[in-house]
Amino acid sequence: MDKISIIIRNRNEQDYIGFAIQSCLDFFKTPEIIIVDNNSTDNSIEIVNLFSDRTVIKILNNESYTPGKSINLGVKNASSEYIMILSAHAQIKKLDFEIVKENLKKYSAIFGKQIPIYKGKKITPRYIWNHFGDEPVINMFSESEKRYFFHNAFSFFKKETLIDLPFDEIHPGKEDRFWVNELLENKRKFLYEPRLQMNHFYTQAGATWKGIG
Image (cartoon, rainbow, N blue to C red):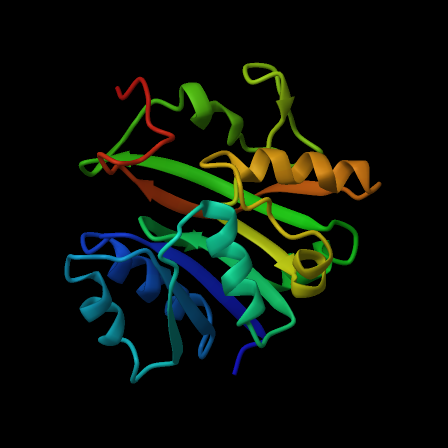
């Protein structure tokens, strides 16, 4: 088995979760995939189970959902040295695991480039999307948000990092921005690596979508 555990948070993501899981299998032969579900009522878990013949899949349920609580639950159940967090409405396009492992020797967290897709159309990278440029950035600071910027929809860590510094379980959103501040307070660094790329599909419930065009 590949030495990576992939955590995917899910709530009624039947339209795209199959694409997310298949893209993981396109880049890792036998990863451990951990689905942290939040009382889904659609067919997303049925779709997840379609892949149970391809790799190890663990399905957990988190009834009292917050983003951080779901990530921490996934980490506690992960058996691999490396962790990837992936959005359920994402599709990995470029991933070199050797780049990830090499950079995790120097940085405590890595996040990759996100390409926003609206109904099949690559939209103009405005608002949050303009952070995802073509050059690597150490400890990215967002001028628009006036704080350090880290996005965990396509991100990589060593498990020991997330055990030492778990995500805050109180915040209803932007838990990744709060987490990276704690990372920096502990004298650690993070990296934006654009050679790692994924498509981020539009969903009506998506919190990061604004100014589609």
